[in-house]
Image (tube, rainbow, N blue to C red; front, top):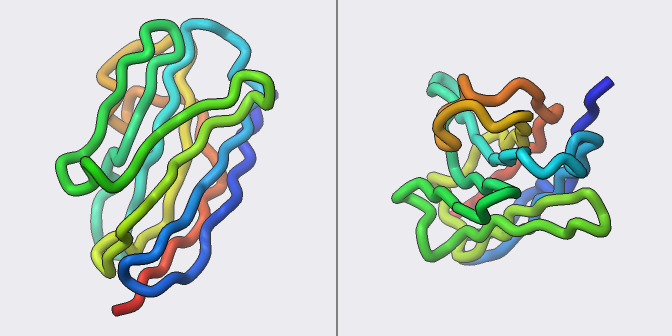
Length: 125
């Protein structure tokens, strides 16, 4: 059974930083793509950042470019979302996701088969 375990959410003031982690049992396959998504109340789930393990290609939403970084640690079967300069509009539930094999646009939630449980990020002004 595929499992994704998230951690790292919390509450910070505007301008602060958080790092989200996602450990995934499918991570060891080379054709995995991994992504971070967020969903605020009343809004659709949106792609924040994504990474193709085979090509190294990345995707970032325009709203987070220059502030968020997706990375991976192969030895730990874990990928991360480093979030800097957080703003109140970043407040949402954040989800990690994996698709194997990577079958569609990395930015699209419909591409991903497997999802983490979500972790709340709250940014106060």
